[in-house]
Length: 308
Image 1 (spheres, rainbow, N blue to C red):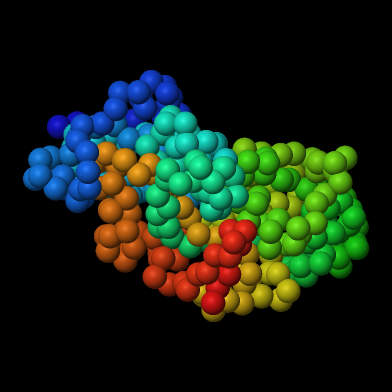
Image 2: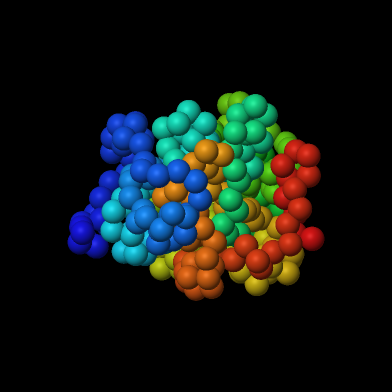
């Protein structure tokens, strides 16, 4: 059996040989538990899991635990954003595609029909700014003005004068889609407004916010760190899990792990583990998320979610 450290080191190789690993295939078929397949045989194989970075750390932590329990299974996790995860699962380049948005928002109906949606957690998301910014709260309308380029200086929203440096996620990001849906309400920024940067991962946004005076962006609560940046209230509501669960904080999303309908035993077993008490009862909360049982969620025809 491989040592835990070896497996964990392998896990963190972001996307190395993604296509070649996916091509190795997995042993077994049908459903399975976290320890064995339905036939009682030990699980084995390679699982590639790509996509949203907002809950990548949660999935990495769960994967470490799962591999400790199943020594012949190796899980490789990479980022790339929700669009990448959904594209990879559609094209057979990954066994699991992570997404902050429903697949219907990114894929054709025929492709969605081939997938199974596993909602494994709920995440709050909100605006964050460089620690030197002396603003603690913004209204939804002010946020809309900032992220559409209409509001350009912190003095316009009660802060000390200085240019607002907008850091966005790239277009395929589910975090961006969630934030824009809640804040912009369908309004689009002008084509000539790009902000100062568009980053492809939440981790890079954290670094950029720290390095850029006057910067503003948005992150999942799981990335919040008061020592690195400042999280803002929105409409005088603090960005907390409790306020998300109560329906008071409006920027949040389901975290999805999509698999194909003919997924192998190891993949199904890992999804089962993500939904088990081991993960939902402790790890989800420890990593800054809300268990799926903590929300009453409804999806309309356009994929919009709301806390009912």
